[in-house]
Image (cartoon, rainbow, N blue to C red; front, side):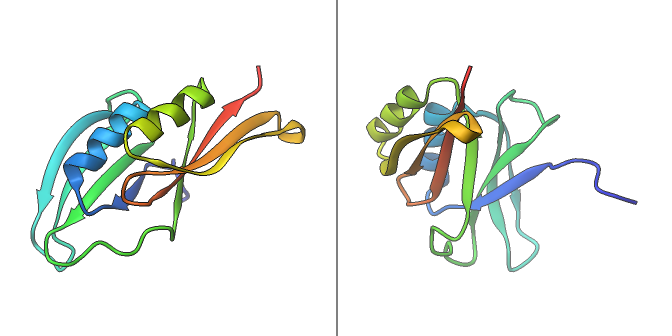
Length: 131
């Protein structure tokens, strides 16, 4: 049996509530649910989010470990397609994020992008496709 679909990315954070607020305000993700799993060394509190607020497409799962510290940031990036790159970067900065690479245009790929970090330092690439 082969791959059916991309489902989710889990991002391990230190402050679950602050991360959920940031990704809600800056990216526009909507919280679907919160869960807790305590049965292993990876015991975790989790916030499940998506663009639609439903679990029928790609999701971002924010996770706070209960028995161990969060790993260092920067090992992975998340990427989001947005409708107004400059506005999203400004919102990120106002919400405690940091601009790592200012907005730039790639004519060959017909897009503009910027690289930011959330308040904990997780790297996020924001992409706006040309009209």
